Figure 1 (cartoon, helix red, strand yellow):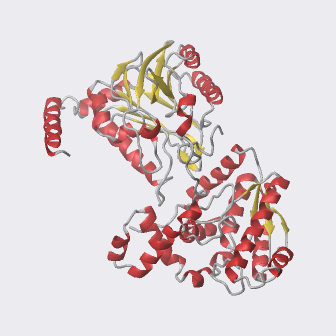
Figure 2: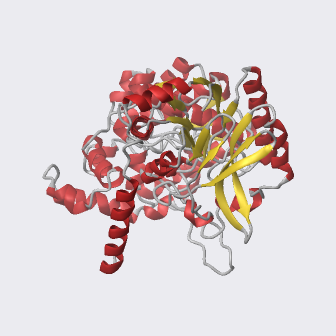
Length: 274
Length: 287
């Protein structure tokens, strides 16, 4: 009932084709990606380098003064291994200037601001380089709402959005992403010592299985709980996270006035005419 | 049927761009003619692309449209099955496939089963066809069943009982479901279905699937020709454009029907009787 094992070679081919196809259809041949030193952006960059050629992949490193030095080190490792274009934009001056006006802002506000600062930089360089912004959000974080709306969740094309975190790791190993990056504790690195699993309160191994049953296999919450493999409270908490973060996966809600409203009864594929 | 060479054009149409797709069809037709093919089969909605949504009325064609006229001329050189949105009188729009041969449209099949679940939304935009008919061609007696039609076992059975020797299934199947299956879970199910269909109906089955991406959905290709013994005779590549060729052999059809006279032994009156009973019982029960 639980098969999260990928046929990595097929998925690699499909995702490379996806990047190549969706980028070119939009009239581009380059992408720009924020490289954090983590496994998601390393995998997205690897796939893009294969799809478009390393010369067409621009990686931007965007450290803040509290960012872990290992993050930059690992991002640089990826850049070297792939031979992709890269540069750094320090976000400390912008962040610090802003929060000088709001000195009592908590960690969450600061973390969100960092994610959105990075987004504006990526989209600015998207225009400068004629490159689409490559998304790196995986299915686990999209379903849990563990991401910043209009921040790291913003992109033009996302090859990883239908892969759970544990599947991202499988595919990364297959593509030769350095083991130190694949195996390390995942972290948004928005503040010192932050780790995803400590913040979420469970491991990706555990939650991916529950998400797979609830979302892919359409088990009811009661059925997952009754299977006895997981604590019922945990299953209910996961289901609640999916539900409460639904807004993050949709366009803003639009008040219906006319006879044809965008995304309700005005329906076209994004690839309309492409 | 007679002996002939079949070609399947496993293409990636552009969503909603008739002119571009027309040029692609003409290119594939030239290749098929070079390969001395007698029949060229295109995938479902090959002239328009698949996830059309509100574009449906904008790309629809009447059966007498000038654009289809160009294919009539081409069909003097190679018979063709192509997919389009048909605008019928009363402004009903169908997911349709036309069989063209000798400068004429010989047959149009309107998709009967419109998938409206999961990734699919066809019944929102399209009208459902209401007939399944075999038809005679210069190459043999055939029937067209579009994609989901083949997932309702009665549909190919009716086609075979109506005398079809060759079941043609244009398709636009988006890959989904992962695992160790190559390339997707649903591709494996398709292949099993096609081969079972060939076997049980002792007919050739021609599956023409498309490739390419629409809104991130990947059409997996892997078009195939299945013998009346249920064996894959020719198989196109997964995920890539291809021109699949196969030799269609009346001897193979005959041998399969000699070995397994399943169609001879069919009990259509029994089927009809039992179906009538089930329909009446359901109506009586309000089910």
